[in-house]
Length: 562
Image 1: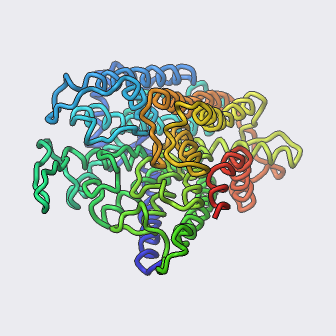
Image 2: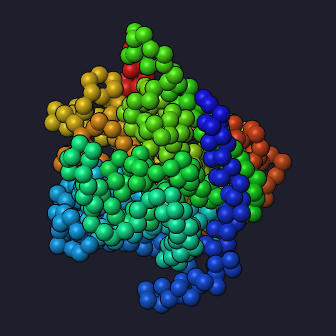
Image 3: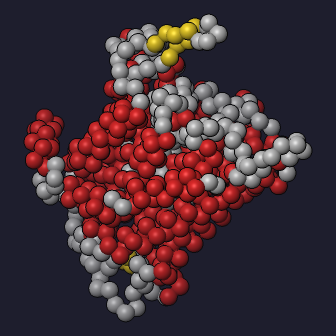
């Protein structure tokens, strides 16, 4: 690694960690309706939204009503986006006269963006019109992370409140998350990206001549606005087919740094928001410490693996300093590895290099990040509520070890909560292991694999891991655009989204109704180094015991083959 590589990593951590405490407090105040810097500007618009929608902002919902509202909104979003993609050829803002998507691809894409996954089995500039990109995908890029943020604050209220039936109002939380939490930051980032050279236009695709005299079509479009929210909302869908490796999506070193930091800026800030909800920022620091430990370990292993000489070229009389295959020469190995680890530690499917070309171990770490359920930082809201599930599991294990009823912040975990926690532990194994086993066992679907042996299995394993984890990044080389994979990965994305949401809301409602027991000398502390260690080991053990056999058939077998 060179000096600028270390500078990039340092700048990344500074941009993410320095504003996180301030931003976390801002998001807490905004979601609870307290006055913020933007209140004079946005409060009239917020009230107008409630008036038009007929929402009583002062009314509270129990967890069941909250869940029904969320499911109804998600279903309506899914149907609307599916219709837009299917009927694209009849809709405006389609200068290239692109036809509608095939129905299984339209279903897969609609589920993907509603579930905050942004998995794409198509190339954006070749398949989608400006209308589909803006009215269809960009709208979902705002509201799907807003749904995740709403669920998080409902869960935080469930933990922090006592003897309460209500956990908030879904429509209010959704509105505030969009207006205060996503829109202002996206405007700023979009303007910065336009400054760096990202296009934002409704012009037709440009026609040009190459130096060899051949005709060339240069795709354009309103890209900057979608790229800003795809990163800040931990969405990740590319406006162009090769995503953030495209020079129009990510033209400079500065745009690369800004987009990279934007991926986990809000998820890190929400860790501090949670501390404000429970009135104990020590909890925030403990959770963040565990996240950073896992992130740094993954980053270190990936950097080491990608800087190793390519064994396939070992016999050639050339000097190797790592492998640049599949990586943009504009960014190099360190920036590509940092992006791969960041985007899979978050619920973000953007890529600036092709993970299919990473080394066996370098490609395994992004996969393993997702297999944790993307709790290292995760998506907007989704990452932290996933991490809080592991916090409750760690507390349960600690209770077993010290021989007393487990409790977290004065709330006792009883049989109902434990059963719901166990239910969430089944989501990733079913979506990844069961669905992937079907995909590689059937001759037709298995033909989508482009490489033989362990690497080919890794392609399929990565695809179903990415779908179930609601990540959306692709290993590359896997022909996902078939009816079978479109439908099965679509089901995996629905399972990965709502298989967590419903148990989480049920736990939130159960905890909100409980009285808070006073913490005593025998209470297990959940903010010190001991708990950070227990939480980190719990995550590693659950992920390792569940997925190590599958990894042994893919990247580990590939690594041992050399």
